[in-house]
Image (cartoon, rainbow, N blue to C red; front, side, top):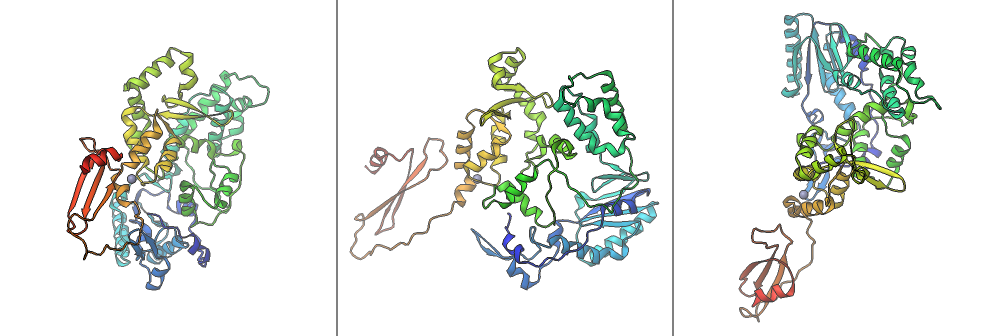
Length: 496
Ligand SMILES: [Zn+2]
């Protein structure tokens, strides 16, 4: 459940604090032998609200009106108050061996016995403040630990394994666009590569206007050199923390500000804005080719873009979709035709060179073509289950699926699935009408009957979709008759 606190936030006074600089934390803590990381459970929910504040954060739902008793997500200043609490709890312990950033606490030591003492110290303090840890996220006594996206060890700190993998798995470019994408990614690591500009020059030359695309030996050499440097996991000892912090994304500033000012934002944008309103930030636009995040985020788009908000699960991982595509009679037939270079099939479908997935091309507007992953029949239900998890209506569920996926008859499947979702049917808001009871005194049994139809319900095994109800007003005797449809013929037949 998400509560929209924008109105409340707009009139709430800002309570600003300075979060510790991640650089400071890493700088302080790196270079030790042993590490432990502790994670506080459901961070904000650990903070109790004053009675006078509960009313301000009250919300209403179909089940009634409620007041939170703990600090909810999305209310302004939540991060500040949370940081204040943790600071109160741990500030005097903070130093070269104990650091924290919001709900992540890191403890360093040069021996196991030192580590034991420090852990006990932190545990006692957390207990005193009634704060609980998430046992699933605790990492104890490691020589190499991932903390705030960095690997920390006795040697210093280096970018995490995930990003390194992206570089080393990158295929050799086949065209200028892929070269640009590659350079965008390498730009992110350029400060780790000595003499970067010189090393990368042969590849950069390919992007010059009027240069024919030839992946020369020099290009391959440059490519190999950089792969190797990154594979060796360059370790950073320090960076300049006095500079402002930039979060680079590959969304463009125009569309971000456009969405923020829209009166009616799409749900996915609303969720992000609710999340972001806790931060103070400015939006700037960086040209695509200069944007280091361009590549990294695009690499993730395939798996993460939508999954951040709705987890897609293993069934819809690329590898599983690929497997199912190869086993499904319909998709495997298309794949076979593409391999045979059948021109009619190739107009509509192709195999994505990076993921190996069968894709469907959809014309959008004049000359734009969007590529969607072709979902084989036996994965359709999984896809529907995930997309309909928040129990949105037909259109929203459909819009969500069509961002990434395609299969024939998709809309009809979505409609059928949503309309037959038991959860949605039970929670459908009921229209309130003022009713007057019929006076009983001059009625006899069977003299005044009321009929109604309940449905459409999920189809029963014997193909019935509705229930015809008949009530005798005098005796309150009720008959309920399952019927397949609501035509007058069917109803007359059952009345007889
Ligand atoms: Zn539903």
